[in-house]
Image (cartoon, rainbow, N blue to C red; front, side):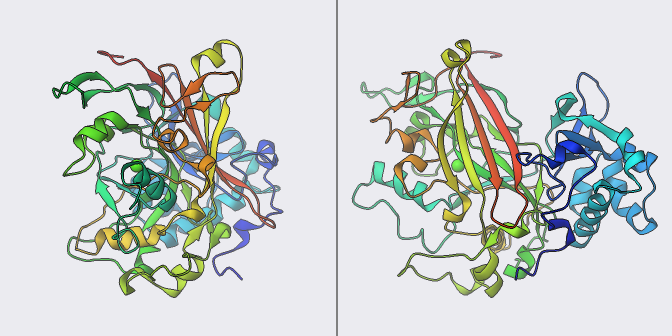
Length: 439
Ligand code: CA
């Protein structure tokens, strides 16, 4: 039995919001992700809402118009003021209480229903924003199939470096350029040239990376590392993350200090934070290939071995400008699963703090590209096209080794397994636009 399940995970539960009961919705009553929004076209201050079906429950209005139990009011207060970070800082007991309260309020037959009906806004009328200010952004490398595939492009005889099975590899990224999807300006940069003098101009090998974003709820003090049990109390939720990457800039600049301008021009995240409570039915044992070393003790716990991994299916979809103009829908480029990751979310938190580094509310951890073991499961074009040598052929006949201007990339993720309600993370869409000033 999964010790983390409660009434909010009941797969039979239905909402009085009809669209939340559709079998293919990402946002049934078992999910209840939080995000920030304002009514589209308005200049109103940002509010916090809950995604339910194709609607957003406006928590500012919900606090004004519906009765709530007295003990919930202090927990709901930051949500009513639009401060999602302040709510994330309250910690897991508060998150669980509020999740239960929102579930009851949105459940079919709820006495709060008539009040809350007035607090719904259609999601297509909501302009989403980043969930909170991101203080720091760290990107990891936990997709071992990605690490092996990319390593093989550069080191065919030695694709996986010896530290990989021991250290959750990561680097400190750039928080200022993290945003939601939308136009993605092709970056200019310095790349290798046969002449010996590097070229400066638009990247010719622009790529996406299929990742999940892990959002820190409760931070730790500087000099106070977290253990595996504490790490389970640290992360608030997950979103999709696209780590746009300029491979040609990366190849020239990355030695000896790692990624820099090849990564920092843009990182995109999806706006709804799906809580770890919502993900509880999709926790799985962490498995390692036979013969691989077990993690060092500071990265190990019985709970992590039994429940540390997550069954989350991830997909990448592409629609080119030509497909769009011909009315052709996007095509799926790949599908993979978070279960193939080598390290768990909790291990990333523990490792990040193990030397004394402090995490803070609103910090963002990227998992790294989540690829599967087969060639068609690469979470980047670099993998799918074998470094550009074998272009991906699209159904319309076009080919892609890397992204062209006008290409629209959409990431999706969902969790589904027998005996549970399907939940999704929504989608994350970005369209490449030409390099140039103000593009
Ligand atoms: Ca990455």
